Length: 90
Image 1 (cartoon, one colour):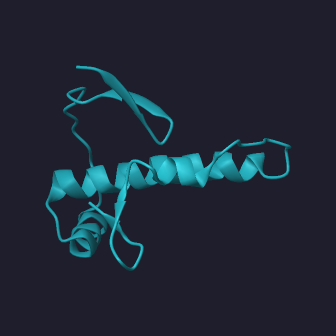
Image 2 (cartoon, rainbow, N blue to C red):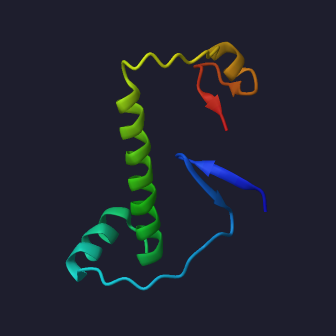
Image 3 (cartoon, helix red, strand yellow):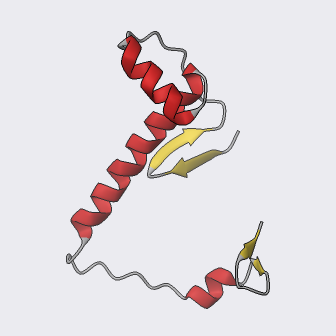
C-alpha cells in the first residue's frame, strides 16, 4: 500500500488499530445519535474531526507569518469538470 497524508497525518490505507476504550454511555449515545452511525464509525468521525481541527489550528497560527502560497486556481481547476452552474461534477 502506498502511504498518503490526510490533514497532515501520514498513514497507510490498511494501517488500522483495534482498541478498547471506556467511554461514558451517554456521551457515546449522543454522538451516535448525531452521526446516525455505529460505534466504530462514530469514533472514526470524531477522530477525523479532531485531526482536522488540529490542522486548522496550525493554519491559523501561520496567519500573518508571511507564508506565501503560489497557487493558480485556473490550473487547479483544469483536471475537473463543471456543470452549467459552475459546480464540480464528481
